[in-house]
Length: 219
Ligand SMILES: *Cc1c(COP(=O)(O)O)cnc(C)c1O
Image (tube, rainbow, N blue to C red; front, side, top):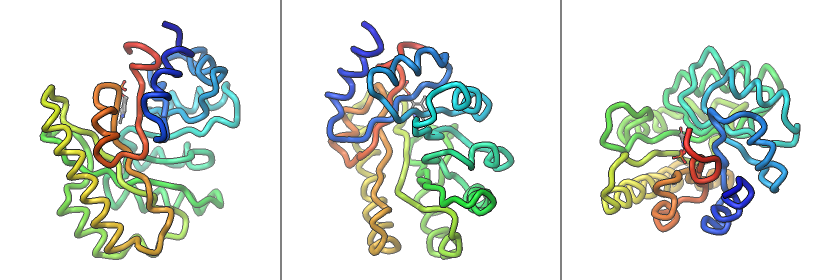
């Protein structure tokens, strides 16, 4: 199967959700192939790799940063990044705001919720995120736009568990929306679902899926 065929299949399967084609660890030539097949939103999880691709690929690509981001690296991607998916600490959000101000941008971000059972995954627990949102510190940030919630399900076979985790994230999104973002139409994105679980994610509140392997093959 070609990348164009894979892309078409995934696009059809995840309609009408927004598809982020996750190109991490794949060469720029494969990104170009997906671009030529019509894809414009790509996800990367390492800053250096993203910078190299951003420089040599078409400038109208909307790049999403989907991985764990170290605050000291925000400055490199702030001038162009379309969406940062995984804000996992107050410190990181403060830094994105600072770098957004430096380059005169309002940078769209998602807050990463940790709902999976694995301890290795990043993100705020629901309690931590409640406490942070209640602090209202983020309301002072004029150079970030909090646009929704991102999460990853546990890496398990049990589809009921995955569905329950996505439901939990969706409930959290609705709770945060009602409490803090009722008047913010931009707080509208639920980013969950990857190659192995996006059909489940679609049934459980997702508005944006991040799919790599099903489009580009194994890494
Ligand atoms: C790698 C990655 C994906 C895509 O994973 P696939 O299983 O290849 O679709 C999605 N989200 C995040 C955060 C990732 O790191």
